[in-house]
Length: 320
Image (tube, rainbow, N blue to C red; front, side):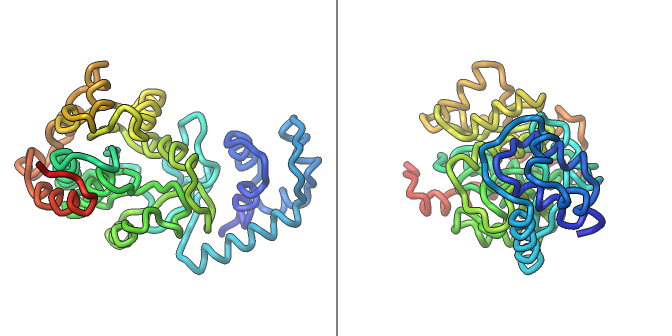
């Protein structure tokens, strides 16, 4: 826990606070004892606003103690907004998580991340391209960050892992409640491969409909650029694209995702000016990043095709 003790776990368990209020409390206090001597009324005065939520510090601290015990038993660590290990790009956004929970290793701040996201029910060509771009980026030494969802996200993670890079998955649940269940083995591979599962939610938090749009801002914030491989008109990937633009990130669309109805949202982004990406080499060229294995970075259709075919059958996608 370090010198801050349970401070950060207590702050995220105080009910009724906004993200920015939690961040403010993290920045104001340096250790658990400074906060736990205060009452609800003291906190209300600090925040300078009334609250109708009923809580007391003893109960909040007791919940934080439970969180700490579960985290220790399940290999979960956490980092506060004010600590040096907190991802620097994430700290810069308007509403960063006050606390980031993780299993594995936090991303190397010296390596730019590329976010690769898209629909859960993609076309086989888009699946293959997500895999090949993920693998191509790995051959250049660059990690992919995505959301561990079925479809495009999972294929991008797999490609990055197969290329030998430590990929990063941001969850819409706690890191001990991996969703979907079909990707639990992939989540294990990510951690064992030197990457990380990240979440702003404390241990035991189940996914909810609102947690996925919220996690998308973290995916884009961690990345230097965001690639939307394939997205229909109404897609969570388009929410990520919106966050990318707000946060000043590069925004691209993949060539395979601009055809078919599954890519209607991607096609609109392209029509609005997003650059079309064909291979990982296109991203590397924009970043002036050299690839020691140039041929691997330029693959337009490689190992992703066979893997896409098997995954398409699993997702009951028509290959014809």
